[in-house]
Image (tube, rainbow, N blue to C red; front, side):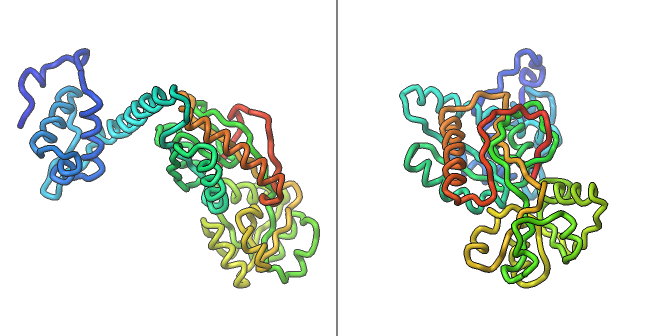
Length: 336
């Protein structure tokens, strides 16, 4: 069914798109097929098509390209999807916030964590939330800090743990949560690691497996420090995952540089040893977006994260880390 002449001539000031239309559109974007999207929404396919056509008429642009394989979004459709996702999550939060007035924090909170951080932090965090806030549900996204920062701005994440250094957007509020010493990590049997700490120059003497994203986080800290020391690194391999780097190190491929918490299990098992490198640290920030107020569930999650970090560091479960209590604004740089 095509939009009527009245629909097509409606002035911009009279646009009356509603949340239902936006929900329909986001489901269509997810499935890229009118039939499948209509089935998920439990409505007739012509009704879905009609609502999308009304959106197109109201906005004066084509949102969807229809073809034999289904439907794909135009550039304008991609932009609407980004904005609609934010609006729908905000609308859901309003409903949860009103319910929160009854007392108990509840609802879903989207949390972003760097991969090496998530590997040992999600389990104790889930246990703490289950004990203290059983009606708060976590949705965890693992990615590096540039992607997590973008997701905070888009509204697809509520909270994220960001790692320095990257340029911090003004729309993100962050507080310094902890610092972790970067370590040279090698086989536990390597006699060169039987020391309290190492200078950055020691890295030039071994094959090095670089872990993490280029120009960010661990990689950036190591490469900057090496450049400042006029040091040429003998990097023999590059991987993103700390887990993969640990496997290669245990197999004798060389050393890597990372935080000790990322290889805690391997250290406890006697496979690897981590020795701090003098002057090399990572800063971890607890961040949320400024453009929307945090729900009580989000506040509960952030409070739980702060307490859990302090507890794990205090009990020795977070090696070579130091907790920070001072809240800071994101005027510096962050990443991982």
